[in-house]
Amino acid sequence: MIFLGFLAYAEVASLLFSLSNSQRAVLLAINTTATGIILLLERRMRDSRDMGQSESWAWWRATFGAIRDWLPCFLIILAYREAALFSAPRPLDPLNGIFEGWDIDLLGNAWVASIRSEASPWLDNYLEFTYLLCYPVVPLGFAVVFLQSRRLDAEARERDADRFWTGVLSALVSCYALFPLFPLTTPRLLFHDVAIADSHFVLRRLNVWLLSQFAGSGGVFPSGHVAGATAVALSVWQSSRRWGAVFVVIALST
Figure 1 (tube, rainbow, N blue to C red):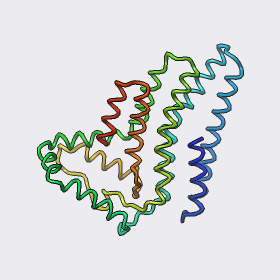
Figure 2: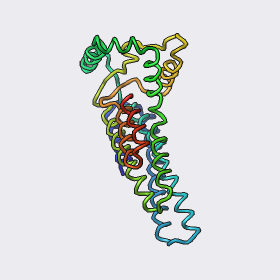
Figure 3: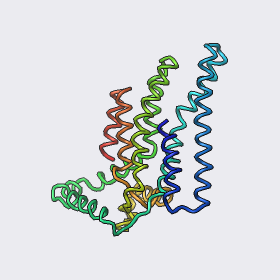
Figure 4: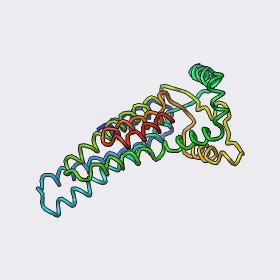
């Protein structure tokens, strides 16, 4: 339901923002297809429940359930790409100045600068690595929840999956929905941030390459990366304190 709400939001936004007719047509076709898949899976899940506990229907329920549970990993990518269509960064917008001031106050602090200097290059590489984890952190987090609940009955597993995705999707699509309201320019473009040639910064170059290939040019506050990592950490914490602690560290590092 959360994701269907975002798809409806994207369709309304496509009429309010300056998209081309071809973009609107592609958006409508993709969203209609995604909506159909979601509703079909829900219908099959209900049918498999109504047919009792026979072995054949139990297999179908497990199959449809697994598809339904993992589908949001792909839907999140779709939501991010659609949100980027409505983000028109304006480098001279006052919002950029506000966030730039925060960066200067934080990173220009003598204590922070001293720590960065003493811990380099290990701290740099660690932070680049945790930023790289922003992409697999969602499926990895769900994999932990999925494996933790494998000994439970089908209904309990579905409840765990629903609890995880309710938190994560709520956090992510809320950020994506704010893209049109925050005409921010991402720091790597605003400050012409390029990959460092030093061999110690392989992860840096990889991160910049991924962003240049797949990320939009606009930014949003709150950060989708941070919101997603935090929601995953809190959701995993409910299933496993040990693994939850690992994901909390990743979220804080992000």
